[in-house]
Every structure is written in structure tokens, then in C-alpha cells.
Amino acid sequence: MISVLFGPEKGFSSDVIVVLDVLRATSVIVTALANGALLIKPVSSIREAVKMKKEGYIIGGERSAVKLQSFDKGNSPLEYFDVAGSKIVLTTSNGTRLIKKAMKYSKNIIAGAFLNLTEIVEYIRNVENIILWCAGNKREVSYEDTLLAGAILEKLNRIGRRDFHDSALVALEFFGRRKEIKFRGTHARRLIGLGYEKDVAFCSQVDIYSVLPVLREDVFIKR
Ligand SMILES: O=C(O)[C@H](CS(=O)(=O)O)OP(=O)(O)O
Ligand SMILES: [Mg+2]
Image 1 (cartoon, rainbow, N blue to C red):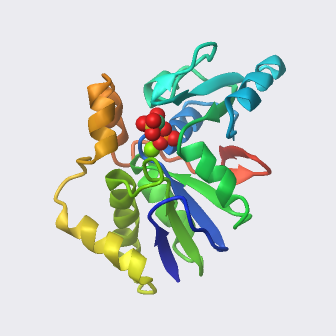
Image 2 (image 1 turned 180 degrees about the vertical axis):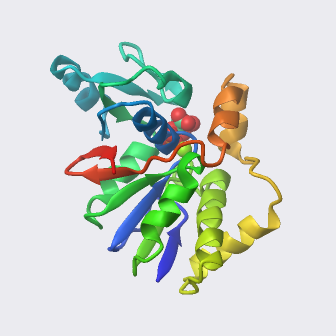
Image 3 (image 1 turned 135 degrees about the vertical axis):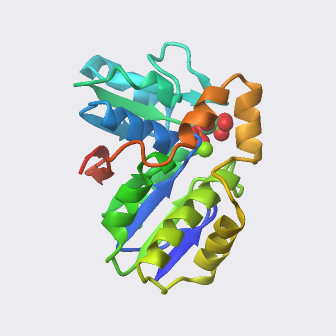
């Protein structure tokens, strides 16, 4: 059975959990690994991230969408092209918190974005129980994560999967009504207002990377 969780509140166990935070945490994770980062460690707090600096990590993340003082990088995927060979610790408002939560519910967690859409589908196509877990925006449903859930489901549907929970059917039908990958929600508008329009455009690209971030212990590495 394939289910979609539209926000971070309620979780349950599953064979695989695909964490979706299109704007922008999972797009950052995919981009960093595609550009040669060795690993990305998601953490919930700023303090945990800062501690890792001494261990040679690049520290990245945001609060209220803006790079933190004393951090090396923010939460823009465009800042993660020059990370070959590095270890990164990442803390963000929605995405990294959801990843930590998802760890309670599955040993098999992957990070999904439009950037690696086909890689996600290839990995989960034969898995029995799947949750597509949307990070959402400030604990609410987000347009772009729901759209990605629908895009994944459409591809699964095309290859014959039909075991969709009602939540999955809702996301699938939502995606089916959209003709383009364009983010019309609050989070995209807010990021554009803050000057991050290039991030929004970058994160709406489909399949520019053939990379799948898988969580091993508590760090994402390339599969
Ligand atoms: O940086 C982002 O895009 C958001 C921050 S906020 O929700 O806009 O304040 O973080 P994320 O965890 O990637 O949703
Ligand atoms: Mg987000």
C-alpha cells in the first residue's frame, strides 16, 4: 500500500519512507550529493550543527529561510555545487526535522525532490509499503510537496501500481490536473519575495540528477 502524509504531524511504520521537502531541504540534499559531497547529516537544532564544525563538517541551514550567522551555507541548492569531498551537516525549519521524525518509523529512508524523480520511482517500484511523507510548510500542507508526491504516484501508476491509499489518490489526482511543474503555494511565494526566485526555478527541474540519497545510520549518502 502506498500512502501520502501531507504534513509532519502523524506518522506510522513503513518499509520505505520517502521524505519530500522540495523547497528546499531535500533539493539541497540531492544537489549536494550529486555534486560530490560524501555525506549529509540532518540535525534538528542549530547547536548540534555548530558542534560539528570542529569535526570538519561544512555547516548549512536556515531559520525563516535565511542563512544563519556563523554558518557556512544556507538552504539554497545553488550553494551546494562546490562541495566535492566534503561532509555536511544540515538543519532546516521543516525538512531536517521531518527526517529525524521519520527515523522512528522506518529503517529505510530516502530523500526525494523533482531533481531526482525517476531515481525515487526506480527504488520504490517493487516495495510493498511506502509512505511519501511531505514536510509541508510550518506544519501545514504544502503545494510543492503534494505536487511531487503526485508526480511519483503518476509514474508508479504508469508501471502498474494500483495499491493507492485515499491519500495517494488525492495527490495523484491533484498532480493530474496540473499541466506544468510550477509551484503556486505560500512557500514558493515567500521564497520569491525574499529574493530566492532562482531557487524556486532550480527546484522545479525534473530529473537533472540521477542520485538517490539513502539514510544510513543518521547520514545521507549516495546509494
Ligand atoms: O529554507 C526553506 O525553504 C525552508 C524555511 S521556511 O519554512 O521557509 O522558513 O526550510 P525547509 O526545511 O527546507 O522547508
Ligand atoms: Mg519546505
